[in-house]
Length: 344
Image (cartoon, rainbow, N blue to C red; front, side, top):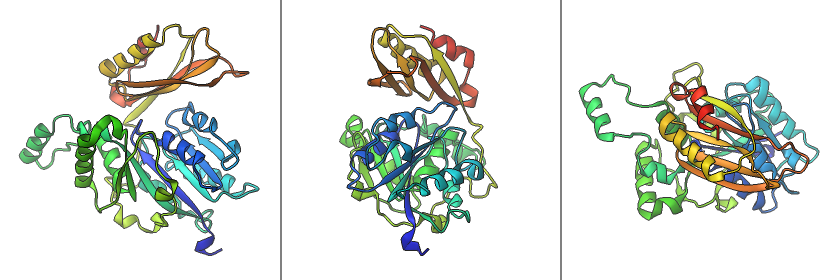
């Protein structure tokens, strides 16, 4: 099988809450006739993003073409999870025209690209491109360096000081691997914020790549699919903080799954999530909530103190079970405090 017969794969990477699932939902519903398949990698044991995507499955991307991996980072479990999942998608009766991979917000993309060289799949798929999503508002606000002046002063005083937090390294590795960077939530950032985010990202990029502002994942599929980057053969141009490591770990982060009863007051739930972000440094919360007296489930997603929620589909025969996945840095995760903080 020659390279022209390979199925193109687009890797969608980006920090927690940057809008990866929203982008993929848009691509599914605006695929321009392409037969799509999606591989979703969750951090933590409870799949939420996969469930969100399945609500918009259609003839071009049926539900069975959406595969979830919730057992950790796919680049750390290549043989056990990633390779079998890709083989599963490639063995569909109708082979997909294009595969989308939504990585965990904590994933490093470069080790995943290396997995495309595994003998079982390397002759059948190719990395069409890596799309990195960056929250324009957060980047413009300097969230990865809360006090840049102090950091610069420390670096000037001692070149051996490691000034980077784990979050900044993840962010930098993701954009350094990208073929295109999408600046999401551009409406919240405004024109000045988008320009500021572009400047921050450009300063970190090892090479010049397009940066496009996006609102609600709305980007023409023709712009980001069909790049033909063959990124698995271009690793040298995609430097990483972890290039000299044998393998990488995700011990910097932890997740807690919290089961809740039915909720009467949505505003009180939102306030408790915002309080956790302030007091426990919680990075991300996502999940479904059963609201008393309402037949539809409430989808809740937060990044820091910014909480979004909407009723997405009826519970029908599914058990009315409220469940939230809470993600934070290892040293900040206090399971007891998180459970107490969400007890309404």
